[in-house]
Image 1 (cartoon, rainbow, N blue to C red):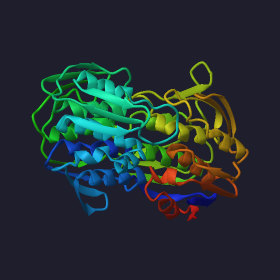
Image 2 (image 1 turned 135 degrees about the horizontal axis):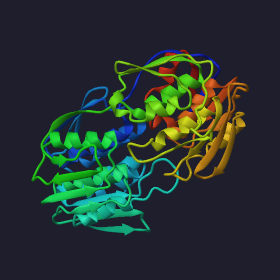
Image 3 (image 1 turned 180 degrees about the horizontal axis):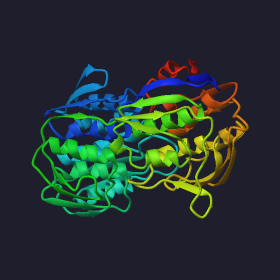
Image 4 (image 1 turned 180 degrees about the vertical axis):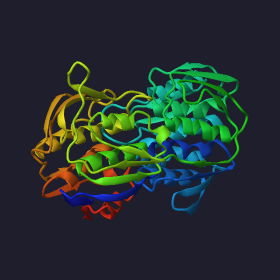
Length: 435
């Protein structure tokens, strides 16, 4: 296992180019399973979770050609359906959360799909009911083997219907959309997630010949078609990485420009950081963050403590609450962080408390951060990354802290951030990867 050794307290400076969006990639990489045609996808991030999914697709029979770093051509002309019931498939698919996204396309095109209980971050209960309830409404029948933790689903013919999801699950929405595009008739899909990554998937499917309307809203109308063809698709820049870099600049008092951010797809992210007192400017399609000696958290109009919480799009993404929390530790003022969607995502705060942060963990969902206003700097410690987003939050804390920090289990960070140590060194950070 590898670790990061970091000597913090250095101001950074320079430009950062954002990688392709991990959460979009895990969806759109499964869409080629819907067609025998060639699908070209660019701006694919070179990260562990995405590379695992590409390898899984290849072992299933998808022909994959790497054009250059970040650009691949996929052709799912022949899929080995028997392989989906092997132990090798179960082992590979269980190692990443994104493997669940193959089920909708397989069901739509081949009438059957299989998946073990997928892996991913240990951030609390992440049920799959929404996916399978949507498939069932389209006419599929599924079975769950509790002993093997293995799901199987099949349908002779999917038929369009009215679907009202019990939760606006992003992955659930994507999976059901990919199943519905080849279903017979019209599917009216209500309470669908409408994140930019879902919008991107819908636009890609339409380019392949699907008929989806209502894109960007939570009410989609999907007119089933008999078959889909190939297309070209480019993945958006990763909004979570953009938010992480804004937090990095603030914590380390650095002057950083984040290039080509697709500003119109960032939603409330820039203004949420501004509410912490962080100055940032839009320059064309770039974000410029000047070096700031201090930043002060706003209060509500009546003077009460600001609350920042996650919500389905267009609300604030849960993946950035960990970043908001760590950035608040060095602000002036206090803020209540309310993580509504996942019950274990705030447990990494014990590492920040060991570094000298003043945080009260109220319960598994809420933490109050009392900003130190840089009066007392964080101190370097040894720690372990529990998941992707908490790992990057701890990395940002270490880069701002006095002295040496060591972060273990950085494979978690590598799952979501491409060449993060190299890019940080290019800004002047003192960070090295050690075994």
